Structure formats: C-alpha cells, structure tokens
Image 1 (tube, rainbow, N blue to C red):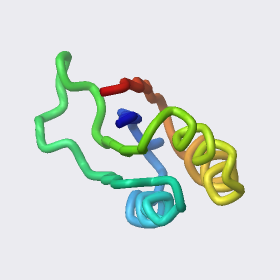
Image 2: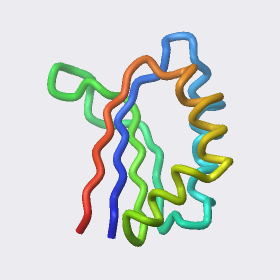
Image 3: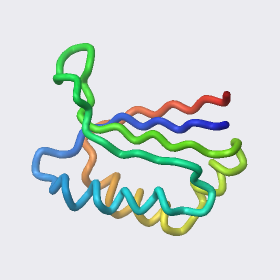
Length: 95
C-alpha cells in the first residue's frame, strides 16, 4: 500500500465548503483505494498548525503516479487547491 498525506491551511478568504467539496471528487479517481479529506479536530497551535488533512491510499506508487497525472487531479490542484491554500506539507509512505 502507498499512503499520500497532505496537511494544509486555506486562505482566510477561501470558501472552505466549496473547496473541500471540490477536492472530495479526488476520492472517485480510478486508482484511489480510499481517501478522506477532513478538518483536524486537534486545536490549532504550535504542534498542530494545519486545519485540514487529506489522506489517500493507493495500491502502490504506480497507482499514486497515475492519480497525480489524471486530468481531474491536475485540474483540481491547479484551479482549486493551489489558488486557495495558504500553506501545506506532504508526505508519502509505502507499507
């Protein structure tokens, strides 16, 4: 299994419902085994600086790569995620 994790904060003027709703479409892409995009329940602070979390599971790195190249993914990243995100970090692991 390959797990993709993104922690992020939206811009202050971003419409969270609209953006997160658009991003949830990513869960329907063909190589995604499971995905969740949720608000962090840990209160914001020095040790928890990100409000939003995306966790995506894929069969393997090749499935993750296919997801990255999928037209829907690239469209959402370019037109929804990047213009509306203040900051983010990513991490991927293989299990």
